[in-house]
Image 1 (cartoon, helix red, strand yellow):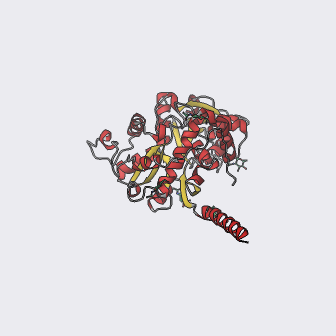
Image 2: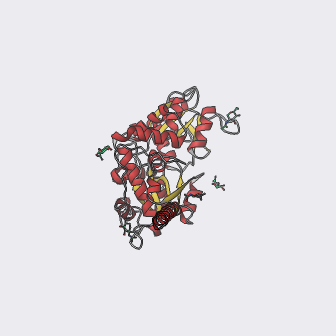
Image 3: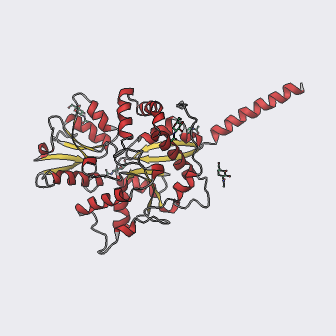
Length: 361
Ligand SMILES: *[C@@H]1O[C@H](CO)[C@@H](O)[C@H](O)[C@H]1NC(C)=O
Ligand SMILES: *[C@@H]1O[C@H](CO)[C@@H](O)[C@H](O)[C@H]1NC(C)=O
Ligand SMILES: *[C@@H]1O[C@H](CO)[C@@H](O)[C@H](O)[C@H]1NC(C)=O
Ligand SMILES: *[C@@H]1O[C@H](CO)[C@@H](O)[C@H](O)[C@H]1NC(C)=O
Ligand SMILES: *[C@@H]1O[C@H](CO)[C@@H](O)[C@H](O)[C@H]1NC(C)=O
């Protein structure tokens, strides 16, 4: 009786324990323009978020005003978006955003043509879709086209339509929602490989990494007021970054290729063949997600972003004499502040070698 009682007690304890573990997951809201970067897919599908006690909700961001306002209001724990947005809002309007790490170098960032468009010169006299005419990607587009001798306003125009998913769908049609023809746009991971695989295939007329490298594209961005982890080194924010760090290391290790491909395929609902191409893009050393060891920031990549924004007159509200080089020095509450990332490095959990524990969702 005593024995049964004890084992019943332990059985009950372990049920409670499991229940406690399930309940212990803290909500973590991840705002993203890009949707599922390969790092995110690995973190989500291979259990890095769950291992950190997090129940992550990925919220797609329809436009940058909405995305960054939501971050400031506390609607996202972290936001993944281009560092150009942060540079723009911090230096032009003193918005309190801080970058805790660099996610990528612009994976598969390309200029793609609508059906029938096969080279940059085909853009002459046409309209190209952008998320916003003042975005960093619009500036990169202007730079590459100007190197080919095409000037905005004179040789081509911008059509403001929104995020990459929307632009990808419209590009396949070659028209905007109202039927206006469009000639091309900027695409990025994971849409570029989908474009190449589309039928008929969408042509890639230029790769940004052939013109600008290194290029700091997506940044792990937070409210500056959340940048100090000292009062809670195990906060959900620190654990969220730790999960992403674990996923990044997993993705970087070539031994994990097969498992990472499965995670990308499952998270995006795509075939293994397409996921293999996405994996190749994500692990490209010049433009992918794996060259920034533990999300280290490329200062040169950031200077290139600033340089391109300068080229298109994108610092209109910055006072004369402003020292950009000084302004990108890391420090507490500044544009770059690595304290959350450093705290997260203490919490990284690796998955056991050889395992591919895809989570069930
Ligand atoms: C995760 O969050 C979702 C949405 O808030 C909720 O429905 C779900 O029950 C949560 N799951 C766990 C395991 O906490
Ligand atoms: C941005 O998205 C929000 C939320 O969907 C929407 O209400 C707003 O009109 C959008 N703004 C622009 C400029 O598209
Ligand atoms: C693409 O064109 C088709 C046929 O004209 C139309 O039904 C569909 O809504 C268009 N798709 C988009 C994303 O505009
Ligand atoms: C934070 O987590 C680590 C590792 O899980 C643990 O050793 C430490 O005691 C925790 N610290 C606090 C303040 O909760
Ligand atoms: C890569 O993963 C393999 C297998 O899991 C492991 O043996 C190896 O140590 C890892 N390499 C690095 C650099 O972490």
